[in-house]
Length: 69
Image 1 (tube, one colour):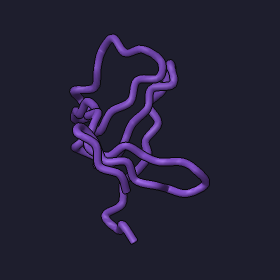
Image 2: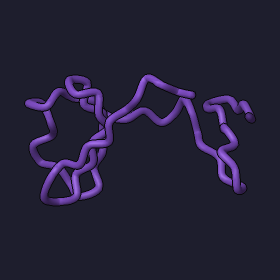
Image 3: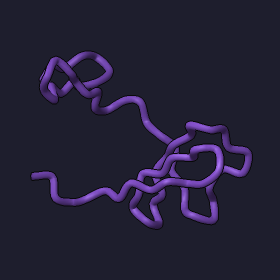
């Protein structure tokens, strides 16, 4: 793990790392999803506890788990 002034980089293996801390993403409830959304938009749905992605037609949901093991 490497700490910089704005973020923490966590080594996830195979020469890859993930930034933790910044940037932040948008959040909404289901009824409050963006109305004029562009393909590739993603955010967190606080009502369903899912990370959501707009593919240009439908919202895809990736459930988040509290089990960080």
